[in-house]
Length: 136
Image 1 (cartoon, one colour):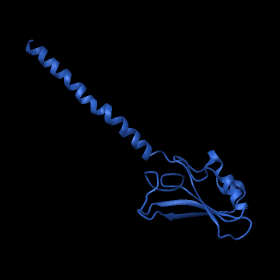
Image 2 (tube, rainbow, N blue to C red; image 1 turned 30 degrees about the vertical axis):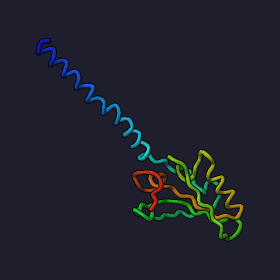
Image 3 (cartoon, rainbow, N blue to C red; image 1 turned 180 degrees about the vertical axis):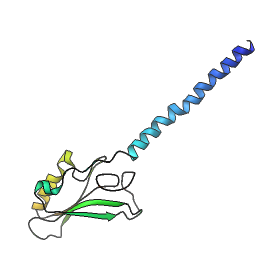
Image 4 (cartoon, rainbow, N blue to C red; image 1 turned 60 degrees about the vertical axis):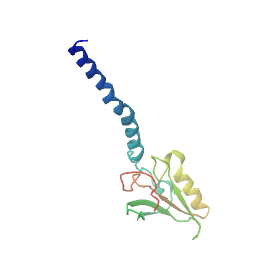
């Protein structure tokens, strides 16, 4: 083999070696970033749309003080000590339109339960850049 063909062969070996990390690490990295940093779902409905009395509330997460937003819906029938706290699904928000979350809240309120509906971080009107629950 002459020098020129050896040089071409050695250059052609570097391309697959350099491409391998991109092929094996870039897709999982991209998917991981998408799953932990999705575009937040926006809250478009409110308890008012379902004829409920409610209060807009805000509170801070315990660990990193991220401001979370929610609704306090008191029992419709009487003052109650029973409360249901709802938790929306991944890439959703507190009204949970897809499963009729506000309809469920109305039924619970009519049955004598207070209802707390809130947005996890990076959802609805809550702050934060990543989604999910942070444990202590």
